Amino acid sequence: MAAAAAPGAVGTLQASRARLVAACCAPLVPGWRLHRSLAGPRVRPAMWARGWAPAAEGAALRRGYSSEVKSEDELRVRYLEEENRGADLKERVKMNPSEVGPFVSKIRAVINEMANLPVPTIAAIDGLALGGGLELALACDIRVAASSAKMGLVETKLAIIPGGGGTQRLPRAIGMSLAKELIFSARVLDGQEAKAVGLVSHVLEQNQEGDAAYRKALDLAREFLPQGPVAMRVAKLAINQGMEVDLVTGLAIEEACYAQTIPTKDRLEGLLAFKEKRSPRYKGE
Image (cartoon, rainbow, N blue to C red):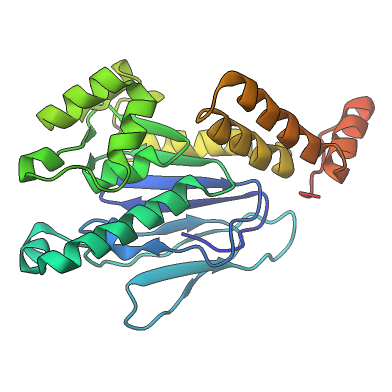
């Protein structure tokens, strides 16, 4: 995906008509990479940010992107297109059983990295998000879909189970009973059905360009961008960690996260901007 993205940027990655959008209100973790095996059969990364450029890695199974800030006020758009293939079922058949476990572990680790990115992430599903594709979307903070999109955890059809976090994140997203039903049946939902069960936050009629969900995701990302970068980062941290514990512990986590915003220059800038009736100029400090 990206490394060291500057505040105020929006990064996107498209995989099999399911794109990931990161509103870079805070720097991404340096060196973060998206494993190409997660990308699906046709990968066309589209990076929307300040000066995105590809970092070649030879024969390695990773493709990285780094950013160079040209100026604080400049938001440049550059599309980087590449076609390659990730793991498919024909490749899996050729795998030695001893290779499958480590392979899936790597996929799980990278999806966990996506979940732990310190910036808001949005999955825009305009086409198919099946199996690992949906698991990657579940690792995002928000999911939006076109009504014609198709998504589901279909692994039980292949006599396996979701191995990239699907058995854990789907119940947390839509509830245990319904998640069991969908995983046990390997059912595929369209966008409207996904919205009805709470799997996606927004559903839109597909447009002629086939990117209705992607456009909605960008609109959401632009809503996030003006906010304080430190506040966005610790808000995500407080929500994610708080959902895994009891309420009393969660409130303690919130208090600790709030404390991180108090000494920041951005907090003072926010108060000053309110007093002066102008837009704040946050720097992530």
